[in-house]
Length: 136
Ligand code: FES
Ligand code: FES
Image (cartoon, rainbow, N blue to C red; front, side):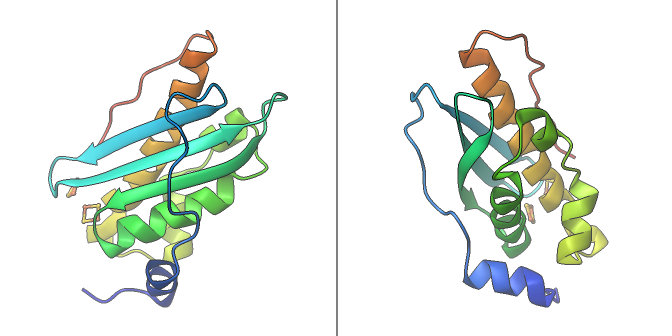
């Protein structure tokens, strides 16, 4: 499997690795898994009182493309509103990282992780939410 330069760059210098307190009021946690390959991604957002994502962190037990996808989206969501974050498409991630077809599901994992994190945050704050369980 040939990885693109951008995948390798994120893989070697992942942005925003780590975690926030799962119970923190201003944190949303999304945990998603890919049954086919067993990879797991946890993505967390920290949201300001006015609904802006001010920080994001991830931990991914997975392939290089999954790590690069989660690293990339933690950068992309910062400064976005929750609904803007929900607009991030796996196709944009796949395009940015030049993922080959066999690695597209790794970017889907990242999109699903954001959606799950937003859903978790909204659930904590009492708004109605669609639960996302996705994958392949
Ligand atoms: Fe890995 Fe689909 S989840 S192949
Ligand atoms: Fe399954 Fe990348 S190979 S997430």
